[in-house]
Length: 116
Image (cartoon, rainbow, N blue to C red; front, side):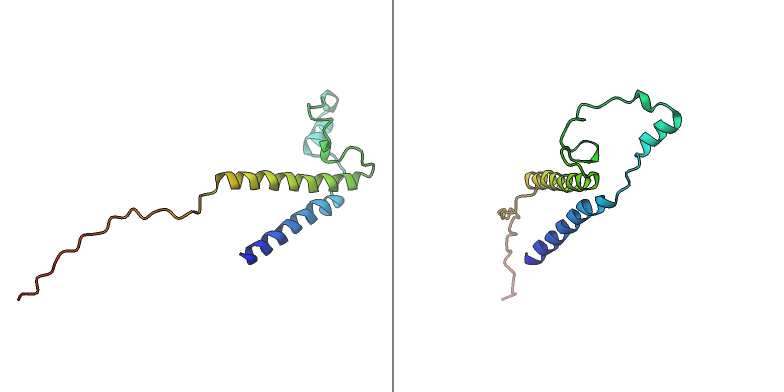
């Protein structure tokens, strides 16, 4: 069991490092949809969505002035939220590990004729 926990802990640290540090190097260029909208000339029709004022909207963190740091914080928060939701779903749906009674019928023994 200790080996599994160590594996999961290392996996968590790798995920957090990729989200926190890797996002620091992410491109600040517009994403694909924004690029196509700019190329085709309809970017001015874009409207803000309902969650535009949420703390982690647009791949950043509101209140943090450094864009790369804001992206790293948002990435780490995203990993944490995803793992929390997935872990909760796993705990909810996992199979019960309690032993179940064996309901296999026991075959009747038939006396053998020894010929005496």
